Image (cartoon, rainbow, N blue to C red):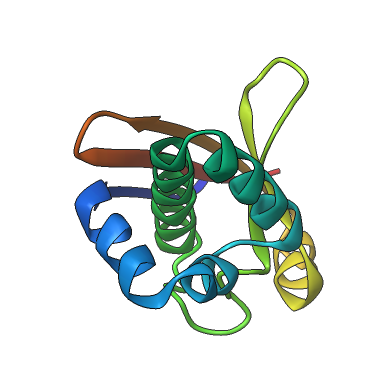
Length: 130
């Protein structure tokens, strides 16, 4: 049964401006440790790719927070929700800490899709109860 649905669209230009204003500190606030390492590697090779990576993660976490009905209130935090990829490349939600405990206690499962274009990143998330 569907527990919740969330969607988000993020202006990549806004993410770029936040990075210019706050530097790595902004990325560290939004990304998990694993995501941050990926962001650093992508940014080093091609800075714009790093911006898009951050924008898609921002968007996916917003969509997930809406799907679980918490928004960005505890136990949902930016860093406790990670957007990973399966070996196939399919994006997946990986949770940590209190958010993982909260999610598991409700026997929930999440499905996420992310995309980006020149100026926008968008995400869609469906959370279902098992």
